[in-house]
Length: 114
Length: 118
Image 1 (cartoon, chains in turn brown, purple):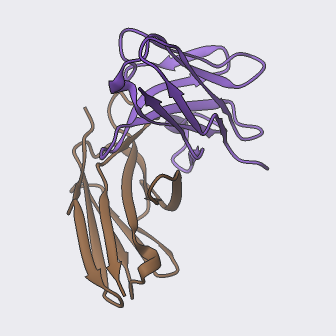
Image 2 (image 1 turned 120 degrees about the vertical axis):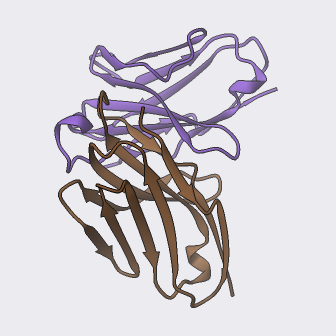
């Protein structure tokens, strides 16, 4: 059974700092991994998707890496801003017996202080 | 393209009543996924449907919950005899094909329906 864990659960940093969010998964037989952003009381916004054959994806100040063999992904946020404050969710698709649904981690709640 | 549309956005029910949540997938999408997010928790998969078929319902509670995706119209998540523990945000996502068949396939999420049970 696929399980996804995100560390840390919460993070508070001063504006301008670079930071790394971590995601680990137990079954390396994934199709892809996605990072989402969720603002309080809102839906999910897809940030980056990494296919199983890829090592990383970049979008603006965001960079996500994937190491399938070790079951890890990181989301790197450069030069953080107060507007980055949100909960960041990692989700994987695939794994043995999976019908294609996404399995989510619990999320990392980020606060960027001005 | 209006994206994934969920309604109602907010729903209040008293214990014992029924709740019906609707999801209209993106145009051209025939695969729908329902997720539940309890307060302070991550999203938990509930059910995956294609038109007129339930593909994976491994995350659905055994009682009171049902889902359908008819040939015409939106997907419906139905909760009978609601209890306070059903209070949560229910998210729907759609994709053009099943996630399992294409590594590049992406789920698009709706804004969610927030159920409050009094």
